Length: 267
Image (cartoon, rainbow, N blue to C red):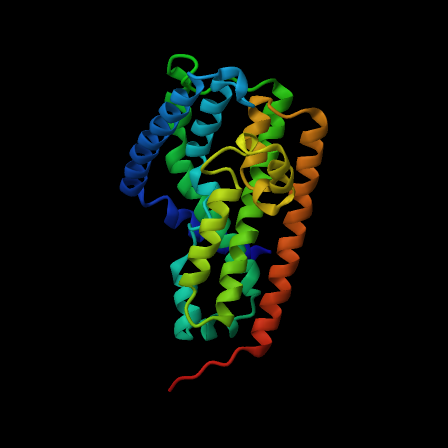
């Protein structure tokens, strides 16, 4: 475990060095957050009672989504890993006495945590100061806030374990770009990144909530605002844990199979 924690520490330290990029990211996320809120505000002016969430809860959902943006985006993957697979440099990592899946997993977590730490605080400090109902509201209760932290962590782990499938499946493709585009497009829609899941038709929403994508960001952000019942929260957390173990197990099995079948050619 020590060697994987070393990879985590190294990647985390490297991620904290990109402060200018983080500043640009914060500005972009503020702009995007305001734009989304204004769009939803225009819709809420028609018939507010027709929406499944209050406008205040929706604004909170959007700001938290922007604050923890790098926790949940699937396209935030390590190009060096994909390049090493395509070029064959992965051979150097395979020669080391390490489990490459575990190494990639810890590095991915470190990268996302470091980028989030650089970007989340300006939003978390500024958004609550905005006039109601445009800013971040207080959590529904202390209990909801604790569950929010738990499900936020589980959502991060589910997202990373899902992204690991892109790395592993890259062993079986000529170019990983198709996988990256496909996976990113699917998750943008099904995670609630574009439209919160409660806004979808009821039958479609029930199906989407069972998929691993809902376990990434939908659960944590909705728990914070208190828009889920006790039963829904319990069911959602169980699904998060289920998909975390399933995705890790599938990823490890595919990685083991790829390591046995891989052929590296070169001079």
